Image 1: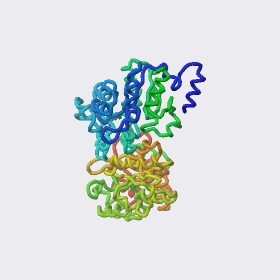
Image 2 (image 1 turned 135 degrees about the horizontal axis):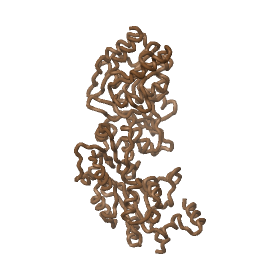
Image 3 (image 1 turned 180 degrees about the horizontal axis):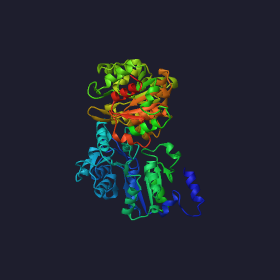
Image 4 (image 1 turned 120 degrees about the horizontal axis):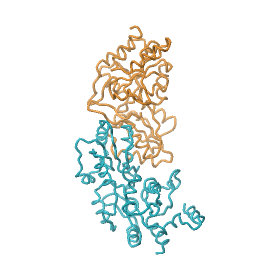
Length: 285
Length: 285
């Protein structure tokens, strides 16, 4: 992979469009969180070696920095508090998860949700009318994905004249310290099949979601690099919006990602620390 | 619907290919069980009014009779014992469920399964080598479809070089006395998405499965009528094999089935009793 990108760069007549040459013209970086900064698991999980320092270096640089996550197991406040306990210098306003975006969509369309989400996320929906639901929102509910709870969400949907299903992300699985775990996308597909409908995804890789982060940065897609461990949702999603996408070999990364038939990362690096060092070195730091 | 079928019949120059005219030339009938003979639920469930008598009438006729089911919550013996307690005159050799067909496939291909099935079905696999599994079989596991158990099946599949997933049926949902419940197909789709693979379905609507029943009857497809409550798996599956397919308005039937874009039943009747009376009356009984 690296050889190939170096080749592109050296033959593109000085236009540094490849990785890591593109780092010279960047104005911002968006980082995925789980699998890039830390591995989730018991308690707060564990920081990935070098990532705390890497975030610090990016913050001290002239690059804008945002965090774009499909995390839906906790409110944004509690989630950021956990990251701070792990020693990351991150504030709530820099973090973009799906739930606040979903609440904006509900208000816009006058929808009242039945929630199949993690208990930790429920307070995010405190101010939302959930009586007589006319849509279903599914998040990464983990242990709450029981047969009974999935049946309940199914019955709400099948009872609606025009069933609407929102999925907070569409990930297949993620890595916790004790192994791979099924993510929300798997249950989204289950409900799609049960009710013969197509879910609306809120979160990565939805272009609307990525654009809301770019808007907040005030930057154009080609000025921003996304770094994530998920080839399809982080890298592919960012590329689909016109950003560069680099994959780290941590988190849910698997070697076969580097031979994926549809999505090729602009670069693949061992971890966030390596990515940040390469970016900053290109920029002469 | 009925009007349309009568029209086809009256314009086909005496060839009685429509419903119920086709009943004159039938040599056999295949019945689905749950939703046609009985509704499942607490205990043994309840017989659908008129169905006990309808089965009796078919048995007294000159038609061959088989029962083709995607039931995977119990061994064939226990399942038939339940039907007999409900007063149906049915014997084990007349009933075709997916598990025995799956065991034949395992033997043929030298596969050792990890089972995500109902506890009641486990004895069916007693003689099967399950050490160091190299495939996964998913059945209608109901309450056993916990997050933990689905994760476990996922991890077996994702750890295999060539993951093989068998699904005992692909139903979306079924009706129990206390409401609609998600069926195995929903969890098949979940695992398909998680592992980016296609499951092999054993059971209805697999043509292989229907043909094994026709073989047992010694009849050709056009000589046999399938009666079920599931438009896609019973009616569509049977039609795909060259049989006629009639849907009953019991079990999981929903009015929109009669306007389905892809599958049109050869006939739609209120219940099994009505179907059998129409068949026998065509045959001059």
